[in-house]
Image (cartoon, rainbow, N blue to C red; front, side, top):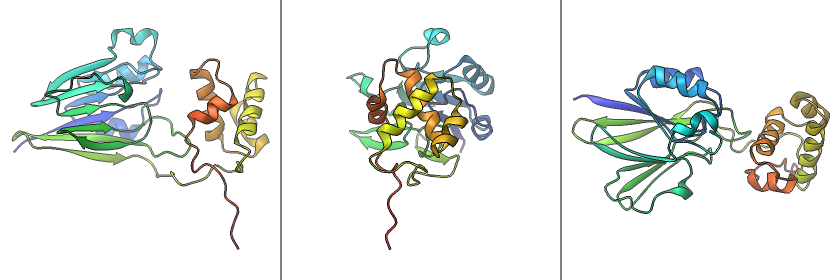
Length: 233
């Protein structure tokens, strides 16, 4: 019995990893839940397999042709897509699978006969979150399942080097000041003794959320496991 495979991804943010390409090449279609960040990634995925996509909050200009949501039927499976789950339409009757992104965190749950899937982000690592996507497998009998694909080491519990509890906001303030002065990410990271990935994340939030201040950036970060805890003796 033939099994159809569909690659499910989101939040590539300008980076199309070789592992993602390899996985997508084995599939008959690709679902992308938004935040391509540029047209190059969109075009490259189109060359691999039929692409079904929605517009993310960072997709502008060229992405105007993409809708904020999309409903399709693939191999008998009714799928509804939206970038941010907060923008789900109210009537999901008849839908088997809801695909969304935005949070960069993998989620798979079932509620009321509907499966809700966030494949996570397979673009640049968000300092400590894993890099993931999913593959949807649909048998001709109608049976289907989702396989989570881990593309990089899971670092969810790894603290950010150099950030002590209580100093996060002040560190972000320094990063913003140095960034406005034209300093490069690696220079800022070396000066503060923190990871480049952390500085990059601060800069990304600042650029994509005009007017945000240091506290606003802290609020948007996943901070529960960021800090270096004192060693216990």
